[in-house]
Length: 133
Image 1 (tube, rainbow, N blue to C red):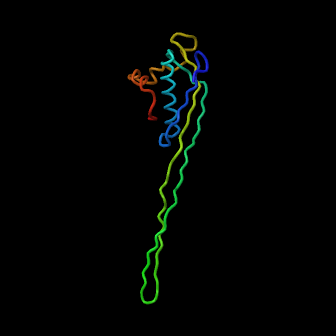
Image 2: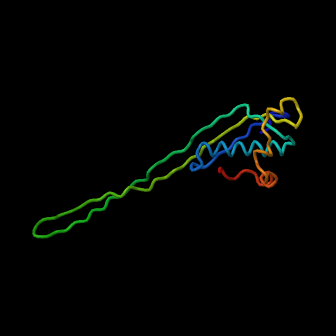
Image 3: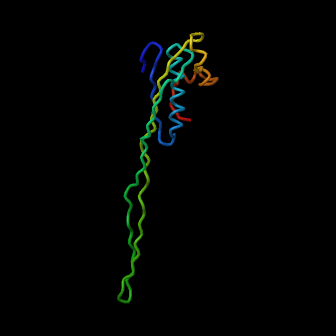
């Protein structure tokens, strides 16, 4: 979300398997992509927030009783099978950035958006961020 001519807030939400670091890496790539899309070359991260909404729960299990009857007695064994474990939720990350054109005052301290994205930066700008690694 653009907040002024040269500032922006970017937010990402990453799957539980990505972890907080994966969400942060995705946010950094998104900041670089949005900097280029906005017509700028470099950016500085001026603030950040993270939230871990990952939950792990276990579904109900089941009991199974097997028994035998013989000679006037009953012998039984009960076993418990735990239910499956379910991981849900996400790692969320938000960054505030200030964007710069090459040569502007403050740009020398900023991170190069194309450098962050690497040699195939043009393809990444077209596709956007869809993974956390």
